[in-house]
Image (cartoon, rainbow, N blue to C red; front, side):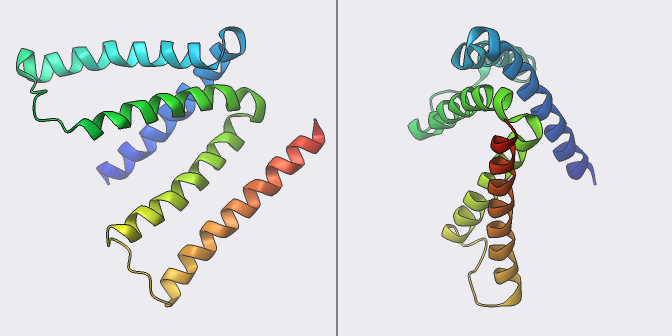
Length: 147
């Protein structure tokens, strides 16, 4: 239950951060907004690591590709800062979730967490992902026609 509540809290924090970044993006640009976001995150996490591990935080055993997560996260925040003011927080969030769902299924299939078989559960998962994308695409089209 605790993990479910933490995941929900994470969703709340993401929506709030998107809103804040989107507002700053409108006046200063998407990548400046992303930079401010990451500067604040860097300072916050630096304090958290120093508090939790002191100056003994090990950096020598980190594989080079682990740093790609930071670059991907920065691009994610920059893109969100650009998209949210134009599509709104709700639609942007739904589209991000659709993308996350599709790639998450692909990753879990590649790493053997989900076994693709032509059974009911797998077909429901695939159909659900496809319906999400179709529904979100229709929502975007409708929103664009309203503008």
